[in-house]
Length: 307
Image 1 (cartoon, one colour):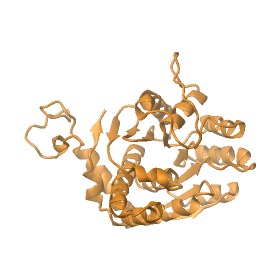
Image 2: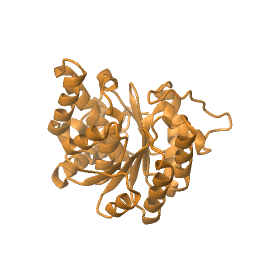
Image 3: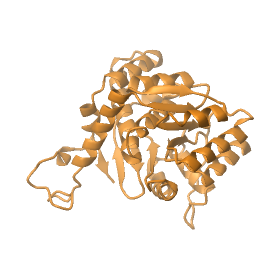
């Protein structure tokens, strides 16, 4: 990891434009927002409802609870739409599709768009299958507040929504695992974030790209988040549960802060879990414990690199 000392607050070498005399950005306000988001989740236990992958639904709910939030799971459109009136944000995951999802998910998205309700999309395996592609294309007319996925999924979704450059970015869909490096998704993620913001009630949105070094952007500001653990790929639902926790933070914070807080929380929790785990089974248990035990300061003081 690179030295992160340049982002500490209150130093005499800070300029009025938010940078330091060494030319590096000051992240004091951002860190304060991240810490406050973590603190607010623990204090308020916000409800973040999920329509998620039924293979991983248990881990998603447990992770939201461990982070300090409250979980509600449903696959009925009217139930999801009605419950959204009392949830701070929602989470939709398109993994392990069932036939009725083709109508249910666009219906839910349209209702969220009409009411201005905030939600997080995980475009699992984007680019594979006619039904999944139709669902994801339908979301363009009623887009989410945050998209969280791997590099291949972000590139594929950007292409589906006609947001690619003239040259285009190509991805090779490979199920739920990425075959693209995070760096390949930087520009697609920024364009996608700007598109989401244009449709958001408060003109704020974010895209989070998971990988060896995570990336989070609101279309204007872009950050890289080193750390985490390779063990995350050895349990089912690590990414799905991160999406659910992102919605938990979105219930109390603006999109960029929510996406950063969730990603940083997961990186630190994964590192703590790996240090104690003897294999994938115990890793998952220790991951949930770490999500519960990490403090706002531990999350906010993580290494953040302005891209």
